[in-house]
Image 1: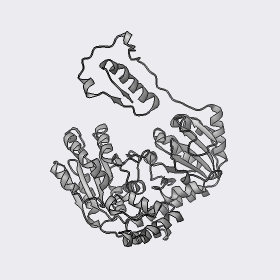
Image 2: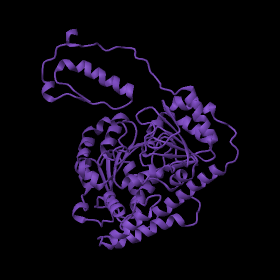
Image 3: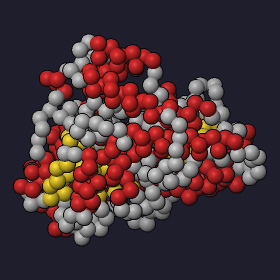
Image 4: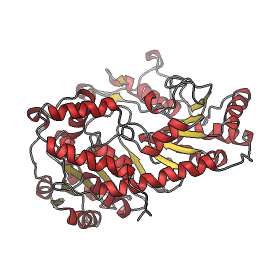
Length: 469
């Protein structure tokens, strides 16, 4: 980030910002204060240390050494139960990730920023990892003997294999991120696609049995069945998981999805099936509250011919989402595809924090800080000339989604959801369960619903399987 203090700086600083963004593959920021914008400009002279922009910069790709690739291949070839973890750094290597996964017979877990790297329809893709993740991703990391991490700095080591249990290889373009999260045996600094293209020919093609692959695929099928059952549970008034589950089959093939950082991120992570061509993102690095709607509007400006859907909680919508709908109303005529759908989970609770307090600290919900007003989000959208839909009953959820996706203008659709439905982790520890129980005993104001919904949600993992609808 640089700040321009005199007009003569602008050409150099702008040139540097663009070059840095390309070279480091990262965002850059250029600040031009209002008073500087009003000053007279004259082209800087050579004495001002102005260097004209150099043209013809070639593209570049970083790749590891042959020796490092050979050692990585030895590790991967020696494993019987391989696992792959992909993040946003693997986004440009979709074909290569799929090829190496199928060659190794590996399961593939995804950090949230890598959710759109591989299709969730692939039988070996276990889905998201971590507290917001899936049971098969937890099982994949628990039971694997080999780990390949591609373009991810996923920081929660408790969801990775136990130290010493798995041999591991990391691929990352940023040398500062190499080896930070796990004791990797081989660290490959390089572009994911170029590195995989050189690594794949070194891997063995005849790997024997399919027991591990079949186990991973069976765990994935069982998880989908569990999610179906959990979304079908009754709640008061609407099960928040059902809202996301009902949207999933209705999403256009070219949709861009954004999600906010509250409990809605759980439902985005677990219930939205990424298919080829779909894109999705959220504040996965910082878990910042409130980016869902701004991200969606940014996506709409970048891809005005594609539908965009934002999944946000009512806390984030009150923080800045309502104001951002004024932006959407102002610029909607510039978008050839009018579909910008902002979906609000209206539970009148700062829900993710409420559940974290219950599970991590044994603290009951504190209504003065956690309860928020029931704002009429749909009415606000209509006051701006946009579409607004309010859904208060489960039987109207799918109908509401279809109407929102068919609207001829940006649309805010709100669902009145039950705050007592828990975002149950894929592996709840005894400490977390004891803490939640303690919060109930301490007089949680919603204790009856918390116990009922929590038990109903958790028991779905132990019911016998059935064919997925």
